[in-house]
Amino acid sequence: MSDSTAAVRYYRVAVYEGTQSRPAYFYETDAGLFDLQFGWGNYTSHMHDSLADAMADFRKHLQSEHDAAKDGIKVAFGEPVEVQWEEVKQASPARE
Image (cartoon, rainbow, N blue to C red; front, side, top):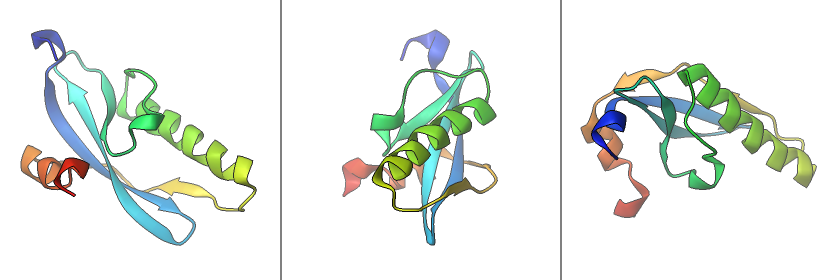
């Protein structure tokens, strides 16, 4: 990232797919833009003007996958919680 898009805040959001839940991590840049951090990279389309917009875009893409599979699973999100970089780093798929 360039200096103008350095990540300055991180958020954990519970993603519910039917009865299953797992976290998604989003980041905010110092320019006030938001996107997914990692782990769901195929759903990252572009930077967003707000955390709510980034979450809505991600939810839309994830729900469309379930709709296409006709599995009846509904996608919902919990409330975002600001977290420290250490938590994000520990949750990194690269650690698996």
